[in-house]
Image (cartoon, rainbow, N blue to C red):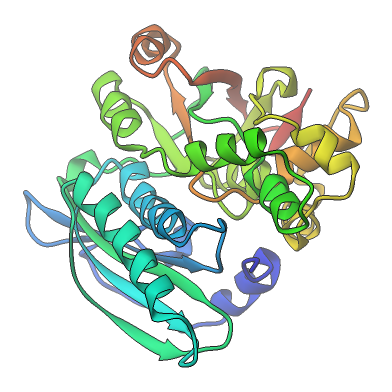
Length: 325
């Protein structure tokens, strides 16, 4: 199940009546990973919701991935998740043992992060879907949004990309077990450690790379920050076999939707292969954090998050929002 096309969704949201609350620090108008609502001078709520169709054959793993995917939205804001509500769409005639494993996998992943599942809601649906609404907390002055990237910053991505292409290949029975395992490991890796590290080094901006792909979420960061992001495609880490699978047509609908979303705001060097371009637009599940931080902070961050990669830098706004080399 792909997200609604972001360009279409943006048109719908832009027509909604304006809301006014001095306590809303981050609302849906910011295209950020989660909403942030100030409770008082010392505390704000971080709230998010995400659910999707199965991304793994193992129901327990599916539940794990759904949990991590939802939690990472809170971590991207620098928040601490506290509680979760599950969203279940499942056929009444389905195998209840399978649903039990999904719920167990999700709850175990939540509990491992110190988060308690306190309830949820279910509906009879022939197409299985599962996810969570997560609530966390943060100090109002310590929120990290997608709007703080500054010229001179360095861009860091904390995970390899390619889960969309790999999941498509798994569904079509053409992915190797090793490649499938690598994708599962990526999707079940929490962003908690990276979130703590970026707060410690003074990151300026962050976004969670998920359904809009690396370039779609980079576009939102560049637009919100009024800067240009330059990305060196050669330094973006890929999961195993991703380019080969893309060359075989293992793409989701999100590839086209994400290209439409960024439109003419992205300039891609002609030397970047067609397959690599698709990898950069590939929708991710529980993807990494794209972080913009001062160059002086990079060394300390990389010492803590050894799998992360420096993938580019931030400059002043030009004719484009993103340049891909």
